[in-house]
Length: 417
Image 1 (tube, rainbow, N blue to C red):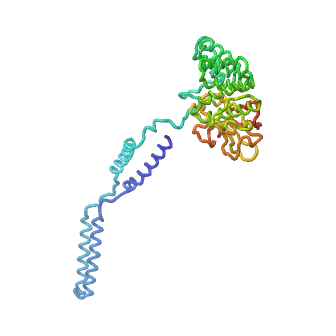
Image 2 (cartoon, rainbow, N blue to C red):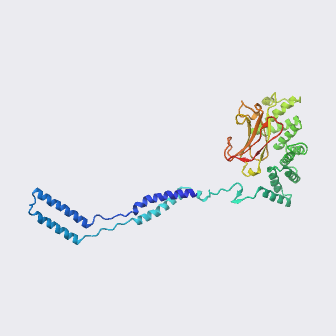
Image 3 (tube, rainbow, N blue to C red):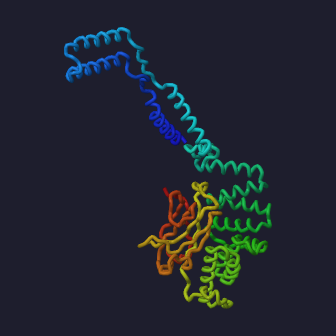
């Protein structure tokens, strides 16, 4: 706003100078004085007398008397004088009028045809993500402490429990989140979504192990809601950890029908089904025949795959919106840094679990199974652009071996300058 006003004022000042400067210069409002006129006439008459003598129209004897008469007449006129010259004056009233009317006219035209509302906004002071209404927010630790006090004062407050457990999960404080989930469950026993999240927190607190109580919680969640997507996903992973491929395929097949509208999720589930069927066939497990449309899910060798857990650093968590896009991809360690397997999700909730495999290949000529080691990259984009841009939040892992049985964890913590 300051720059706009400065530029507008400068241009207006230049225009006023160009218009008013000529009006302020001294200007004479009359012609030559009477003395000057008489002298000019006398000179002209003298020239005529000399011309008459030369042409013979006037006798040279009469020339002296005629000249004397001309001189006496001139002296008489100069003695009598004429009206004095009108003094020079400046057009000050006109200049003053224009100097006032021009700025007023410019302001009126801008208010009528311009966009004056932008002048009401202060664009020179932009609140940071850690400020609200110009007030700086307290550190995360202080906010957590305040939530903890509120929950301690009112342990049956579901909203307080929800906020604090979500904060603990974002901060990767899974051990602290578990007792809150347990208390929350006693207050809301038949909440399938809560049971699935509780199981996830227990597993994360135990290095990703879904066996035991997490599995029981998932079974309970699926009894309440057989279509709970997170519970189905985790139950399939739990069964896979225990080499129960029949249960794995049962959960994945059910899940595949629920995510048919989500292209990325559907591709991941399809890949997991293909891998599970391949391993089941290799182990001699009898499987029901697949339909003709699913023949691509029965390859002769297990496809390459990576299980990826994407976490968000709380330090940058306030900069993320639920409408942002999360790209997760693997790229080779050597040679080109172009992704060879990529998937896209919405930044709705963290931690986020994805599977990278050959079905997510960017180009058919290069797949995940063609390399031995990759680095896994996760990036949050506000624009949804596949190319990294300024302000994106990114995380990169160290080199990992393709087809590792361990879950690869990548943390979103850095902002692209």
